[in-house]
Image 1: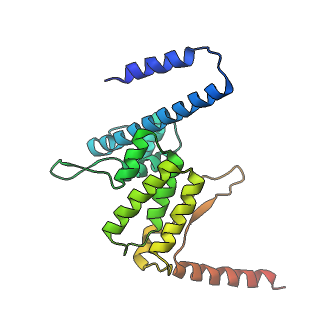
Image 2: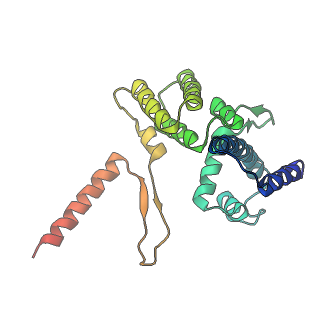
Image 3: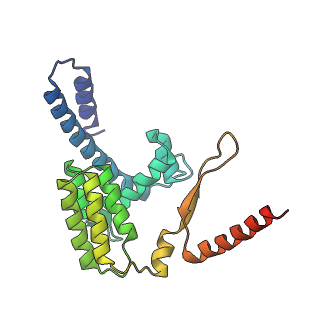
Length: 227
């Protein structure tokens, strides 16, 4: 399987080492390991389109691609869905003619492949574009992506989050969102039932749905307090 055996052998050798080092040396090794893990994560993300474009989930022994990755990688389905979503924006794309195109977030993908940024940085940048109104033109989006990638390389996630929020405020100072923006983000996710039969719910409601539910809950509350 290509050079994966060499990589596995190197990892085995590294993990088998028993060495003494100072605290400073240990931190240096940890930093280098972090870079290696990020680069390997990027490589794994780049393999996902090969899975989703060459075989159906059923052919791979699952009901969905998230199910396939969850089973084979021994991760949760939520984590599998996040990796698939990451691949849609960070992995190279192919058009119908077979020509390869750059990722949707090319600078972020390049920084991740070098190990300069981590998963937390990626989450923040993806959240930024998820909240950016669709009316923002392509050149502005490209410039924002390049700047966010540069900030991610230079700053920790906490600092990047602050910078991303400021940039979002500059690009959408009035906080205006269209129905298309809301439709793109709305949705409800119901988690697994707990031992008591209760199920967690997370998601986003558009203004109309929120108003409807407020009215329903208000009516239910009124009935509950009546003698």
